[in-house]
Image (cartoon, rainbow, N blue to C red; front, side):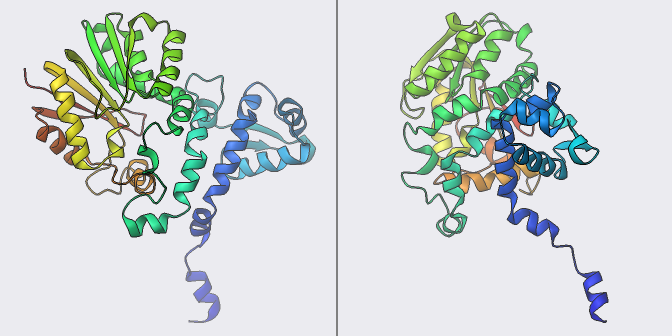
Length: 347
């Protein structure tokens, strides 16, 4: 086989180089969101001149940014030169234009936060250790300032998921609920249930500075009179009792199995007979390679926590059963890439 034939048969290295430079996309998307570029296009600015004026940036800068975003498929482009026009794709119109009710762009403020960059700087070290090399236990350090940033950045995308949970639970048709929202963060899962069920009383548990954000969101949603708080650590605070529902949204993945089971035993004791735990998580299939978003989340937990993981449903079901729950059911939440587990305390 001659050299030309060998070159023809060689795999394309483009995918490898795209992975090497994936952080370029993160930086470009964050810049576009920071500058409200997608919103500007959605509002009618379609040329580089219009975008430069609307976003308050240099014409050269915005021209390079929009061309790169178009090359990556985040924008459409028509024409060439100064007369070229740019448009949103269905995905960017839905998720990155602030005018959209499904806007998710604020999530990048947390996903690309300095703590996350720090954690991913030494994946090699985390693999060698089997857990985070970030000082002070990484993301699970007590009262970590990043959780205030999380509460502010993730409220909008969480509201989207919370509506799906409310639909799954048929919240508008439900009776009176007493709901405990563990590690509530922005509070949007409990707040959304309170909006959908006017008989729902929400008790949100988190660190004091995080709860301040949740209380702001409860006031904005008009449910502050049915929104109460418990300050402290979910593993130590007095949870209270008599709950019909307990919400565990994106929390269990931070901890190892023993810690999860310890928390679930406390939650089990706080529920009324027949009460339910509603767990929203990144749940990979048993192969741990699909769905890709859920499977890859395990890496986030490796670099950011001492013992967290993206648990399969079988692993989560065993944890709940060990903590005393009668049964657990896996529920899909399309179009979300997360899944919900509903676990039942015996009546």
